[in-house]
Image 1 (cartoon, rainbow, N blue to C red):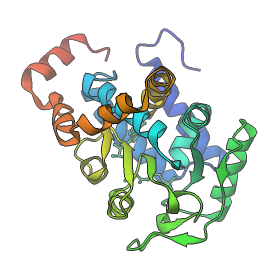
Image 2: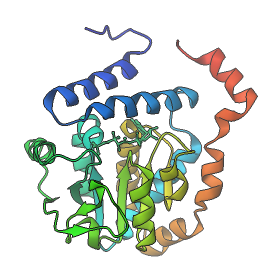
Image 3: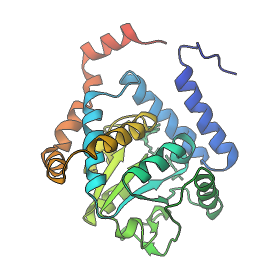
Amino acid sequence: MIPKNHPRYESLMTRELIVEGVEKGITSMHGLIAQGRGEAFDYLIGEKTTESALMAEKVAAAALLLAKKPVISVNGNVAALVPSEIIKLSGLVNAQLEVNLFHRTEERVNKIIQHLRSLGAKNLCTKSDALIPGLEHDRGKVDSSGIFSADVVLVPLEDGDRCKALVDLGKTVIAIDLNPLSRTAQCATITIVDNITRAVPNISKFAEKHKNRNEKELQKLVKEFDNKKNLANSLLWTEPHFVYNQLRNFPI
Ligand code: PTJ
């Protein structure tokens, strides 16, 4: 049992969710390693949403609301960390949810679908009747009425190959990845360098606020967003003064 006053309470509780995900058969063992890598990058940004991440979250919410057919891709880590939050977001932006796994087994796909359904998800794409061209691995298996025909796809915690393949198909790809140097982060249309546990609720908050804005305002937000520039701002932690301040303020 982790006491609530532990200085690293939130980070440790997030680890617990991933471990529980593995125990339930939702998350793959590799998901533990991915979480560890994410934690290291989160540590560098002070485990807080940066200004550049917030900007990307605002633009992502606009892109999802403007989409004709938005789809949110769910993997084993997403299902363990933010299942209810992702269901809420899908309702707010009228997006479908599709389970898409790198280490794919039919058993795990079905467990994740059941998990999401038990939490109230209704808008799930469950077929795997189409293939993303150019992808050799199982992430290429998608639903023809879901990711395959979507115009905007949210891909949290992704591997770079599929992100590039989706961009090559002309889709707007929104990535959530704490590593700003990853291939996914580099090739997505809108890159959110933030922990998924903060990013998804933030996108939902922006989606709620954007409902009071007209379409033109949302289009302007998306059009004026410069992903490369925003991504460069996500590398603040490489600056010595930033690291120095982090060390002074961080609960170790
Ligand atoms: O469930 P599956 O089979 O689809 O597998 C999912 C994982 C995540 C294991 C798989 O996609 C994978 O191996 O991903 P990678 O290549 O390790 O990339 C995951 C990326 O997500 C890395 O760049 C991490 O820094 C980042 N990441 C990890 N945890 C978080 C994160 N980004 C945001 N929030 C996190 N909590």
